Length: 139
Length: 139
Image 1 (cartoon, each protein chain N blue to C red):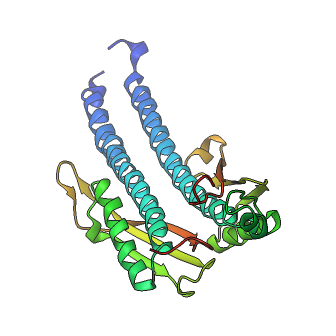
Image 2: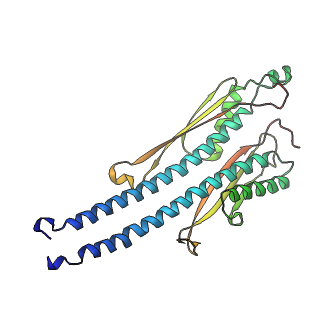
């Protein structure tokens, strides 16, 4: 071994160790973000589905079940209630149109390992869209 | 140079034992967590869809058990290990909330090719709050 190569293996091992640590960190924090995203998506889906059932009954019955216009106030209340029932403290944006409900939820999940390289949290956002349906033929 | 004899071998063994083996173990547990999370969220969603269309709470419980077992079997997980908890305090009244919680253990100590080994588990939880349809028929 030449004099200039002294300690080279140690540096390589240290480098590999850091690389292994970084991979493990990415995997752990990535998994936590993924699991949180699934939780948020489930909450958003529940809220949008609950809201989409709030159709304007007068219009619905007058049209023989063919026109399904969402009661915007009731739908917004239902979506808000369902998000609260789920007990997640994420920010939610609820958009209600005549024929669809869109629920967008956003939050940040704190990291465990990525915090060491200055990434303190990972943003997670989900969207759920629901529309009222009817079993009436042509409805 | 004499003092450095065998250093590379020792460092490789240390790296392998202290870093790579735990890393591989951690990645396999994380992969299992992903799989169980997907199964649990699918199970909670499917169970809620079946339950809200049931005639009565007893029928809903049976439908939930079937849906949960189906979801876990399709992910090649043993459905006997699943715990299902349902809150039907409003007895499936139209427009009411029905909450379902599905939990499944992921064993932390797993051996290659053998799978689960006795030891502590991480319980993966999926929860769904669904709304009983306001107008749909219960047939």
